[in-house]
Image (cartoon, rainbow over the protein chains, first blue to last red):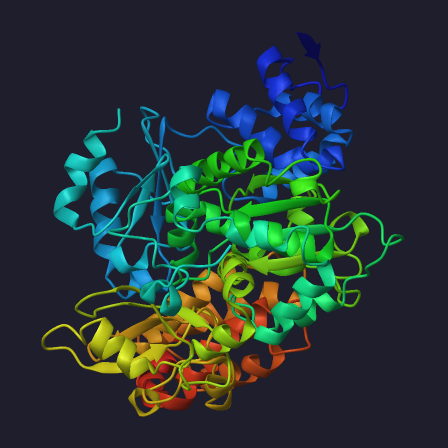
Length: 169
Length: 436
């Protein structure tokens, strides 16, 4: 176990990189000819543990990858599925691309917003749900489609939404 | 080594093994269906040059959307003992809106992709191969990782494959969102653990790609064809189109939108959109009429019912002013607003722009702003001219990659074929004055 502090960002809480996370990141690094190629894999390892990537994790992970913290931050903030802010326990991703538009996804999205009472990009006060838009989910023959965490739900109607969302605690 | 006659396998090579969408992940089950036959046939009996020649002869054109011949792309790779490290990358970042074919191929037949990648990697003598898979395809990731592990255990991957002296290791790399990762050079940057900004071309990846080394990037469907080209030969492959197109092979076509039976069908390349929409997809839902269609993704120009009898191949659809793209058709019915459809498309492109080039980063949100106003009936009279100008200012040659030009394709074609719908969203002078 190593404890890192970031002298450039004194307000960042010290972060303890778990031994198994470090081992998993090192395992990913072996798949590439350059360590930084494991950046996204590494950020995902951290995110799996916390639901998001806490500020303090950037420096120790960057150290493992052999790049600077700002460099890794640039990667972390580029990708829409790496979260640099806390999210709810369940992340709802609503496909809003053209194939779902042609199948009236807006009524499904409205039903979700009505049920959880927050808008796109927001998290419920009880931290149960975060709602995000997402790029075409590649299941257009069964539109409209959403993902909740790793589950894809298709052929949705607004009527199905309350019961579906209630399954995710 | 001979291939048993199998009628379905001869006309639908990519999908004949898939019954009721049941995945085949067990390598023994796949081998019993002639799986890895091409690897045993080609390695080491055929030289890499022989494999390249077979694919070039088949004129297999890239199924990711651009239609560039795979054999010619491979031919640009430096060969020989001094060529150094080379890489194969499978573009499995299927995010083109309306496209869902690679998902099927990877979820149901992961070994077919792995087998094709072994053939491609052998042809260019790559030492490592990566599958760049979008993160949302969770089941595909699971099946591909299982397939790779089993192929390693059988000796189709790893050190000294089938006694050839050639070694290959293969990994699945899962992405973390962003449509731009599907762009070849942005994909390479992303794979290197960088922001997915496209690179300047030339040099093309075949010369300087992953970690500056020669790299081939091919689409899932392209690679999935390779085992069949090796097994049955170039002449058979060319004949798959049954005279419907000068191109060879089948194509996985699809339809979505308000048709009766949306789905995917492997058909001879060059099949018409009419056959796809009205026979395979069962036509429009009752009470709806076809108004417009996108031939193969969000970044292709709209076509109209007048174009339904064109062969869906790269050159024919290009001549009609659009692109076949991924070949998965999206239909717009007569009740839907073209302004809203284009607004949705441009919102998508604006959000997914990586922000690297100014015309794309600033021009796309501008187009969205005007389209939203037109949608509300509050468009200013000059908006149509400005939108028309943007289709040129964001067109080919103004940016590093094809994101902005792709975004302009549906806009320019909607303005061309459905201009009156846009004109209806321009506010009357009195209203316009009130808004101003």
